Structure formats: C-alpha cells, structure tokens
Image 1 (cartoon, helix red, strand yellow):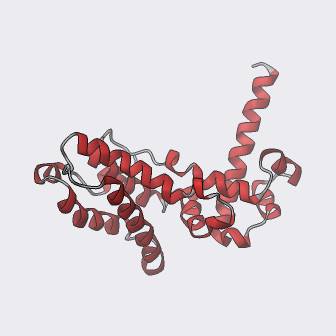
Image 2: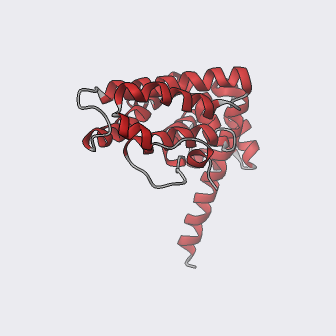
Amino acid sequence: MPQRAVKQERAVRTREALVQAAAEVFGELGFAGASVSKIADRAGLTLGAMYFHFKSKEELAREIVVTQPGRIRPEHESEGLQHAIDITLTWAYGLAEDTVLYAGARLVMEQEQFNVPEENSHRQWTEIIASDLRAAQAGREVRKAVDVEAVARLVVNACTGAQMHSSIESGRADLPQRIEEMWRIVLPSVAVPSAVARLEFGQARGRRG
C-alpha cells in the first residue's frame, strides 16, 4: 500500500477514535462538562493530534450532531411512511447501543452553545421526515391537504420530547414504544386508511441484526 494511502487510513482511524471518545465524554458529562483534554485522554491521543483533526470541542460536538442521520440505517428497504417510521424506530432502538447516537441526543439540548442555526439538528431531522412524507403524499399514502412540513415538525418535536421523558422515567428503555405510540396517534389524522393498514412496527423494523 502506498505511503500516502497508509497515512490517509491512519488519519481516518484517528478521527473516528476522537469522535468515539468525544461521544463517550459528552454522553457522560454533557457539552459544558467536557473538555478537549478529557476527550484526548479518552482517545489515548495527544492534544496535538486532536487539534490536527478538530480545532475545538465545539467542532467535535457539531460533527457528532450533524452526522447523526448517517448513523441511522434501517434494517429493511422502505419508502414513504414506512421509511419515516423505520428511521425513527431505528433511532430509538439505536440510542441504547450506539454511544455516538446517545451523545447526539444529549447534545441536542445544548447545541446553541456550539451550533449555528442553519445546522440545528431539529431542522435537519425535520427535512428528513418531511422528505419521506412528501414521497408518501405523492404516492397517495398521505392525504393531499396535509401540510407535510408541519407534520414533520410535529414528529421531530414528539420524538425529542419522548426521548427526554423516556430518559428520566426508564433510562430510554421504553423509547421505542413511545415512538410507536406517537405514530399510531398521528397516522390516522394524516394518512389514508389503506396505507395505515399496511404499515409495520415493532423490533423487526427498528432493531438491526
């Protein structure tokens, strides 16, 4: 392997190690309690190595929040309403197993300290859900008169609130059930009955492997 490729591969591994370490520290201490030295120590790297890849803990926190959607990979292929459900359920189950997802959920509550409004995670997730709802509307799963952007905001707000309450009351153990409950309440108001009848829920849609 050429030397340049080796260096690039090493740089990718170092960057991933820093993101993982930062996720662990942010997940344990929150944004305010974390420090670059604690993150570097957790990664087993020098401060110089950290600053080569990330200029600050703010930049690391942004990286974790902005890349959250890329970590949500539903087990099954789907589109429209089913895809929106699968994404939210995969996220809900994943929070218990993926430290980077967990850190992102915690950092959401502090993101005004490190994120610009244009990269606000609520806007990011709202557009993802709205895209699925637009596809569902085009496929006649969602009623034509429905404001899909408003519904997407409602879903994201509900998921955020469910995550907060589930964290307090069950350590997020019941989060997938709360997300499913939210969908079962929302769907009859926005989707045609035949589409609702075809949708699938449960662990099979949200838990990978």
